[in-house]
Image (cartoon, rainbow, N blue to C red; front, side):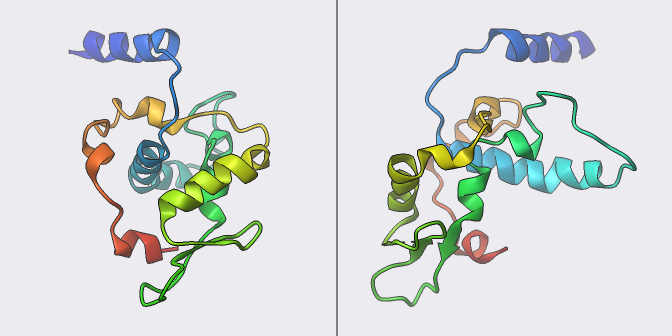
Amino acid sequence: MRWLVLAAIWGWCWGHEEKDCSRKLARAVRKKLTKDILPLVKGLKDFRWPAGCPFDPTNDKYLIFETHKIRKKSGSPSSNWECGICHKQFKTEAYLDAHFDRKHANFSGSAEVCLADYCELFDLCHEAADKPRKAKEDNAK
């Protein structure tokens, strides 16, 4: 069994193809990392992510954008989302994501890892593609 896991990891590290980065899948993987992996890492004394580790939050292509999303109260009549960079308002999160792609693409700096590429490791590829975000997740900070 152990050799199957090692073979799968080997294939991911050196054999997976680059494809378009789904913000929705990246968000699902980030949520799983935040819930299951990062608390373990934070408990380790003097822990440093290995150079180039895709799970290091500083390498996350979309994390900076997620931190610049402002979710307004659901009772707001027209705009439920706001860009924390330029303060433009949007009706849906999808429009805000598209705005980030169009207007603030260079804002992410050197972070280049698409967490959606690792959805298979967390068994999230098919699950997250069709699920809308829950309001509870949107309001949590």
